[in-house]
Every structure is written in structure tokens, then in C-alpha cells.
Length: 203
Ligand SMILES: C[S@@+](CC[C@H](N)C(=O)[O-])C[C@H]1O[C@@H](n2cnc3c(N)ncnc32)[C@H](O)[C@@H]1O
Image (cartoon, rainbow, N blue to C red; front, side, top):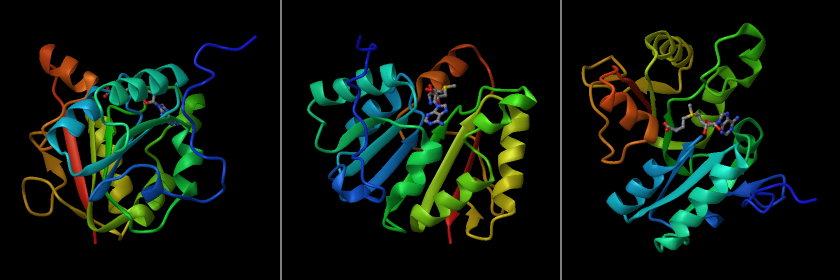
């Protein structure tokens, strides 16, 4: 029997994929783990020139958000694929083809035995460094300060990135400058929780 959302959109099967063939846009942006997806919808509305690709491990949300983007007329330039980013990112290319990567509230796992599930980890920054164009941005936000600090340590180890926050030399941003907000971000703001935002630019 077919499982629900078995028909969720997947990336083409090829081992190497050209991200420019997935969506059209003057430049490309990737969101990792869009979940319920409102950031992508709002970003598509706010920035009509951007091509947007979401990679979401949960088939249900990939299918619902991809259909929602299509229903709003954005299918040619905004898609969500049901993929595990740990396997999908290494397949994407060419190098230096992506302008922005967004990661909103990733990694809600705390137990040591779940460490292998973490999305933002060392190998992740290698893939982002490879995919971003010179001057391209990686923007991460979380409601957990320790996580933001851990992301800073990881990025500091990497000489491909330069901090791109509010103050010179710091990756910390007080606000989200991308007009669109993720569902978790919206909820954190409504609940009065702090949101920790960090951004780096590809050298
Ligand atoms: C805490 S939720 C945040 C959702 C959304 N970004 C937001 O801010 O509202 C984390 C999201 O990342 C997705 N995710 C977790 N691991 C993933 C992976 N390896 N590949 C793709 N998506 C993943 C989850 O399914 C979930 O939608």
C-alpha cells in the first residue's frame, strides 16, 4: 500500500545535479529544512528575481509546501524537494552557483545519540562553502543561544567564510534582513523568545 505523501517531489535521480536546472531565477537561494514552509512563500513574494529551492526531509511538508508554491504561481522558480540534506547537498552543483543559503531553527535534538542527525555540523559548512558564489551568504537562526555559539565555532574553523553581522568581525544580526519569516521564527517572536541570528559571507 502506498504511504501518504509517497508522491512528494524528489530531486532527479542523477548522482550530480545542476541546481540551475531545478528552478529559474536571476540567482539561486536554498532553504534547508523549510518545514511548514512560509519563509519560502514569503521570500518568493518578496524577491521575484530569486530562484528558490527547499530541501525538506519530511515528505509531508515537502509535498504540501511545494503544492502551495505551485498554487500561487511560483512553480517555475520555487520548489521544495523531499530530501535529506546530508545526502542531497553533496549532489548539487556547480560550485559557486548559489547566492544564499537559509537555515531557520535547525536541529531540535539534544541527546548525544542523536548527534548524527544534526544538519549544521562540520561537513555541512564544507558543502555550503563549495556551493556559495563569492560574496554569497549563509544565514542561520535559532532560539537556542548555545547552538548559535556552536555554529560560530564551526564557521570560525572554516577559512572560506567571513562574518557578516551588524558589527564588523561579528556574525550576529539583531534582525532578519530577508523580509520573509519562518514559522518557528514567527512563533518565537510571538512568544517573546529571543532569536539568535548569525550570517557569514563566502570569501
Ligand atoms: C525545527 S524544524 C524548523 C522548520 C522551519 N525551518 C522553521 O523555522 O519553521 C526543523 C526542520 O528541518 C527538517 N530537517 C531535519 N533534518 C533534516 C535533513 N537532514 N534534511 C532536510 N530537512 C531536515 C525537519 O523535518 C524540520 O522541518
